Amino acid sequence: MKRCAEATSGLLFREPLIFERSSPGREGYSVPTPTGRKRAAAIPGDYLRDSIPGMPEVAEPEVVRHFLRLSHWNFGVDVGMYPLGSCTMKYNPKVNEAVARLGGFTGIHPYMPVAWVQGALQLIYELERYLAEISGMRAVTLQPAAGAHGEFTGMAMIRKALTERGNPRTKVLIPDTAHGTNPASCRLNDYRIVQLRSTSEGVVDPEEVARRMDDETAAIMLTNPNTLGLFETHIEEIAEIVHEQGGFVFCDGANMNALLGRAKPGAMGIDVMQFNLHKTFSTPHGGGGPGSGPVGVAEVLEPYLPTPRIQATPDGFEFDSDRPLSIGRIKSFFGNFTIMVRAYAYIREMGPEGLRQASDMAVLNANYLRKRLGDSFNVAVDVPCMHEVVLDDRVLTKAGIKTMDLAKRLIDKGFHPPTVYFPLCVSGALMIEPTETESRETLDCFVDAMHEILDEARKPETVTSAPQVTGISRVDEVRAARQPVLKWSPRGAA
Amino acid sequence: MGKIPENIRYTRDHEWAALDAGAGLVTVGITQYAAEKLGDVVFVELPEVGTEVEADETYGSVESTKAVSDLFCPLAGKIEEVNDGLEDNPELVSEDPFDEGWLMKLSPRDIEDYSSLMSSEDYEAFTAGLENE
Image (cartoon, rainbow over all chains, first blue to last red; front, side):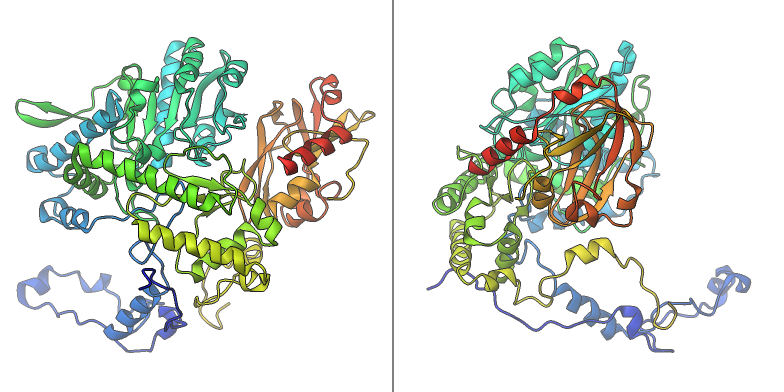
């Protein structure tokens, strides 16, 4: 029996916009007319309007069908494997959702008296401590709204600490295997970027760090494991070099999902790191929804953490804003709270043993793909990897197809494409991160699909014209980027 | 890859630099090799005129449909002019990287730095090495 769920074509609707479905006078709701006291309390007539221009007038079934049909165009991790390297599309357990929807969490407001929200404060307080324990960092803030925001927060703390010492300095060292957000987070803190080239082994060379490090360099910002999926083996030596010259070590902790229960950044000389709760702790990801990018610091940076901090006192949990060195508030209220609830639920359900097993399985799955794909594709740096494996396009170029062609054809096979053309230091990179939640059978199906595509490249048009089973085939990405249509206008109005 | 211009200099970051000794200006762009690797360029971000830049540091970025790539400065100096035409026609970088697709002109802090950049023969050997790695 074939174990792979084979992608086939299905019934999709070319759906007009909801505005274009509008039919004058049609209604999808009925609002009761206020009477008696309610009527007196209602909004005065002067302030009421009869119509809202431009609102679609549609019936309820039309609305339901419209959005359900649109959802059928979507591909998510609940549909199939989504090996988007470095973005870690791991399955989000449904129990997280159930917990995040508990009335005690959804019914509260940040302006409620502290005594009424003790449970929520306890959750924030404990989650900070769990993340500190997992990472070996001294203290953690949950305020940042996403990973890149966490990077920004960390660099802001470094800038403040150096300013206190007398000179904020001007530069930050960033390896070519860093995440693309790292340079931006430094620029926003007014630092210039000095790029470090990785060695042919795909890691940062301490000698190169020593050459570039000086008393105008504020920090090194490296990702560990890096975007080649490799552990930075010289991290301790690198940290020593940077510390000797009075700089800080920022670790982009986005790939923490490879280290849980196995290694603690706090023990590697890291001064500050961010976590991405969606990546490591299974909260939803993408679609512009709320994220969460907690930041952990070593003792030296603790005074600079954003305020307010939550303190445990004999009378319960309290806010502490009396921190003169703090960089201040970096998010309205306390961060994206229900995302924290999901991460908290995940950590409590998994426990220390479960978290370690999750990292072990993530690393095992990536290495399984590295070995099985390594026979016919070229692995960029073919040594045991951590959570992800990166292929280059050498084999594809010989076969007459491009990385993008293979990525598009994978859609026809029922898989979301991996991250492509990143990291930039690998030619035509395919960055594959299976995560711990894929079974061996699913991984085998993915490998089969990759091999099939390589075979199909003998008649390249099958591959170069992919995808074919989707509602829309290959889009003109160049034209979309050069001549974007950013605004919808009613027919005839433009 | 076709022949590359011989009388100008190159960097490991696939940028070219052409010295106009009379004007004391160095024109900078990306090479054909880089342009081919990037694919269709859809957006170019360039610095403001007057910006001081350091060698090997980023001064802008090129966005293609594949990725956003940083631009690394071949020489330290001051930006004197940028190619404004790229705002409306970023494809010039893909189509004519050594001429119409130039990126910026800078006045080098130390003109001696120019001669330490790679010659065309060195750059050709360098890119050939990358392909055979």
